[in-house]
Amino acid sequence: MRLPKKGSLLREVPIIVVSALVVSIFVKTFLIHFFFIPSGSMQNTLQIGDRIAVNKLANYFTDIKRGEVVVFKDPANWLGAAPTETGSKTVVAMKNALVAVGILPDPAKQYLIKRVIGVGGDTVICCDAKGRLTINGTSVTEPYIFAGNKPSDSNFKVTIPKGYIWVMGDHRGASADSRFHTDDIHHGMVPLNDVVGRAFVTVWPPSHIKYLSVGHELSKVAVKK
Image (cartoon, rainbow, N blue to C red):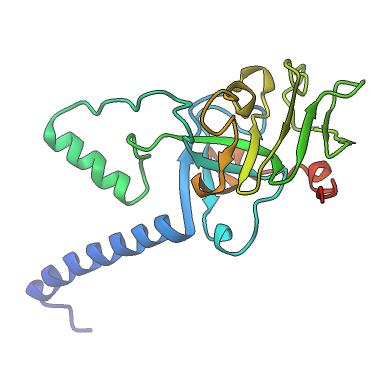
């Protein structure tokens, strides 16, 4: 077997590295993005420190459905100002490179993750006589809610306009979700244009690897006409 010449190998390495970066950026931009879970607002479905895979491709072909877990850009400053990058120019440049290929999150882009409770045209009310949410007049059971939490500690009634969704965290007692931002420019709704994709699997740590549950009770509710 003839070994590659040293000069040939040196020329091929940059091509391989650049090709890998291009493929990684393409996957991150159009197919799958990975996100780190920084808070407990989705417990126990997701734990602090979990890393999840988000399907971005589905946004191009199917409508977002109730019960899905979605990642979205901060719609109206829910998270406040983005943190300032610190460190030397070299460290910042390395971080930016890792952001570009999807290994690190972009600190300039604030993201949240919640469960879709209502879609365009739905009326969501808290709560019925048994403390359950109702969607279009139908009471729903939510087995994914954090143990000991109520479906909501605050009462509300909202009708979601077309092009928006109403979202809530599974850890209802620790989630500053749509309920807490009804005074913003979108009245707590999240524009569909801000949705990055649907979270479908936990990929890290190994002990937490699983497909994420979809609220099937929510999907059974009839669409309001």
